[in-house]
Image (cartoon, rainbow, N blue to C red):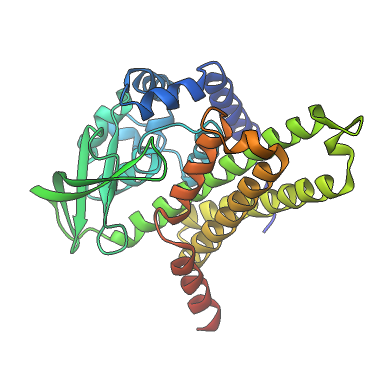
Amino acid sequence: MRFLLDTEHLDLAGSIDAMLARADMPAVVRAWNDSDHAPGRAVWRRLADTGVTALLVSEEAGGVGAGAVEMVVAAEQLGRHCVPGPVAETVAVVPVVLSATGRADLAEPLLAGDLATIAVPDEVPYAADAVTADLVLLLQDSTLHLAEPDVTHASVDRSRHISTVVARESVATDVDSQRALEIGALATAAQLVGLASAMLSTASDHARNRTQFGRPIGSFQAVKHHLADVAIAVEMARPLVHGAALAIDSGAATTGRDVSAAKVACGRAADLAARTALQTLGAIGYTAEHDLSLYLTKTRALQSAWGTAARHRRTVLSAITA
């Protein structure tokens, strides 16, 4: 499949990138880590003003009514800037589930910057950031419930907590959980591409500026090759995200396989970027004071979010051997 982002997609990515670059996101994330959510909430309101949270909300409900392609373009930038909060759930999963069940009215607060999360047992037993979300949902046995957090656990990513949730009130029945799982995995894959791209930029900048033996370390072949491997991994993973988004938008029979392939590739690219960035930066990269630490922990958390690599590899294997 040949696919290139058009001008509107590039403009969307550019506007989100510019807005988040002005927001001093490392400081926002560190505040969120310390339970000061005000700066992060302000960022989410600005994202809502740009239409990010409305992309997958139907026009009838006041949203944009865009497709998965636009969503992954936005999600990549949210990953690139390490935006805290339930990103995949707020931007993708909850709007899709509510629109499909005819309860898009529940998504209206998202248009103003509210946060939403959802658990989908047995595949996604924990809801991300349920203690900070304004809307908590539970999709179980084809029934969608309003829910509330029960037991909350810390994550390796300090800006992220995961909770079991308990149902309070049923709001829809006969809900297809597969669609939720696919869009959640795809949004997470897009974030991982953004994280990988940001870590590659950090490592490349350090390699250009750090000198050893009178030369920038980026001039040494071994460093060049490691960074080139990351660049290749990122550029191979990103088209899989776009292809899976097209599959979702067109209702292709290969959607499950395509989404799983994208999630695996993006997870590997982000893992390679994380390890290479650590090697390139050396000891400073291991410190919590360096911004790289925010990306390392979020990468580790998102690698298993919305399906582990093993689970998605099984999906791909089943599809190609059927």
